[in-house]
Structure formats: C-alpha cells, structure tokens
Length: 114
Image (cartoon, rainbow, N blue to C red):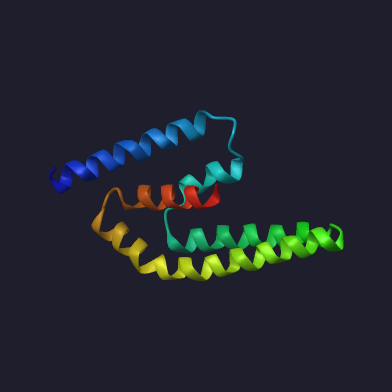
C-alpha cells in the first residue's frame, strides 16, 4: 500500500470516528471538544484545565476518597510529563501530514480525554 493511500485511509477512519463521537450521547462536551484541539498549546491548556478541575473536585470530598483521587492526579501529572515527550512527534505529524496533521492531533487528544 502506498503511503498516500495509508494517509487517506487514516484520514477516513479519523473522520468516521469524529462523526460517531459527535452523534453519540455517550461522550461529554469536554470529550467532544477534544476533537477540535489542533495544537500542542491548546492541548496543554485543556489538559491543565482538566487537572485543575480534578484537584478542585478532590478538595470537596472526604479524606479517603480525596487521597485516592490525589494519587490518580499524580498519575495523570506523570502521564502529562510523558506526553511532553510526544510533543516533537505531534509537531512532525502536523508538519508532515499537512493538511491532515491537525486532524490527527485532535483525534489523539480525544483518545486521551476518553
């Protein structure tokens, strides 16, 4: 299979995923909004906002549940650090995959949000 065919196939699958997600009631607005993220900066702001919301939520709950959630937040923060390592890859995808790079970044962000 030629690279352009694989790229076209990937684009088609991403479009199908987007259509299913947007029509589905199983996903939150935040999860659906993740599909529109098209840059590393927007992804970082969205991720930071999600982490801040989680910390606020945790503060309102009892100690035991808060401790479990705090541990989960630490795990998510560690995952965020790992995602920083993906940043060069996302930049390459965006540059190399033009005009489909932003589509790939949105799909990647959605998968992380879910």
